[in-house]
Image 1 (cartoon, one colour):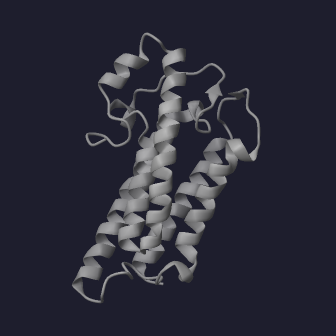
Image 2 (cartoon, one colour):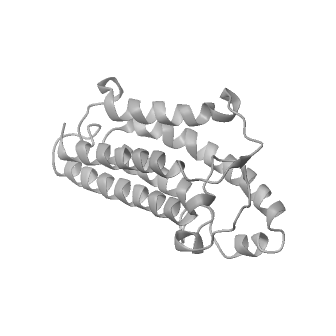
Image 3 (tube, helix red, strand yellow):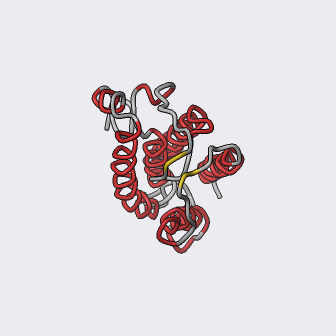
Length: 191
């Protein structure tokens, strides 16, 4: 396992541990239910990430194993590690700014608040954007298997974001449409 592999694994590990610790103090979800329909995609995210990180069957377990040896592989490893770090950093920062308002995708919270600080000044769903950026960095820096969760969850996050925006517009009819006009959906200044 190379340094790039270790760093990418460490970034994802920090993200998962942070998420689990911070989930404890979140506000109560209104009308929550547990089931595969509600939570299946979330379980699949974890499984795909673990597969991409650990199973050599999905590609050589070295940075940019899909490239021939040489300086291109080193550059791809560095770029991948950098993008993964930025993505995880953005997701963690966004989660910290949400505080107790964080919840599972497409759910209503008791006593909701509209968070417009931190990365939410620029993007409405920076957690999703950060996770996608981290997956892109992992694909570039580690192995191309990361494109599988990247493509699948880009579609899932787009669907979730649109559903959440409908809920937020219902909960904040005077403020949320204005907020949507001045922000991007996932990544500040990009998309």
